[in-house]
Length: 202
Image 1 (cartoon, rainbow, N blue to C red):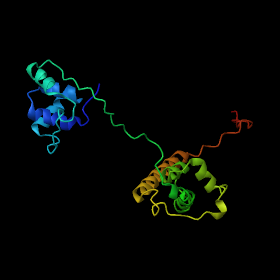
Image 2: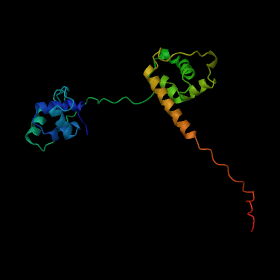
Image 3: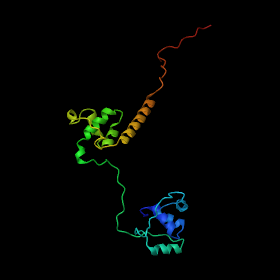
Image 4: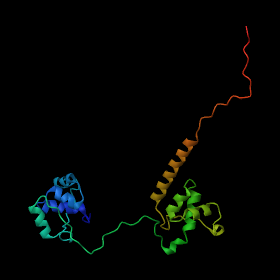
């Protein structure tokens, strides 16, 4: 089912400007009736600006009037040819062409300054790949002999906050690994070939 582009703002407008029930507004906006009631009471999002679904082309005045007369009626969204906004798919961050050649240097910088970072973390920070990071770390990269460390923050590949978060995550991982490797020293097993001591007979 299709909902308004700005559901809460639309719900706020419908609450203030129509005689629709909370249930009707909630169903049209994809919200819970209690959430609509909270909007009406000002308990949540009190500073929200209402958005008219009529002006945005999501509702007609005729459709609105029809549902105001019948509390059991359900609002129907207007059909539109306008494309719906799509969320940006997750993936590697975009890096300008002029800075792509500096990625190996940024990888080398992070490896040297923050050796606790995993290859996948370094790759994510600078927008590189794990095999590339591994090659630079093991000095098997094609440009290893000529690489110079470059601070990725100074060239805009990542931020200081992103690096700090990655370091904290790496430290937590290291702590977990150290805890799992701490094992109790097992007691030496008794040699099966040894004959148990004989007790003296009376």
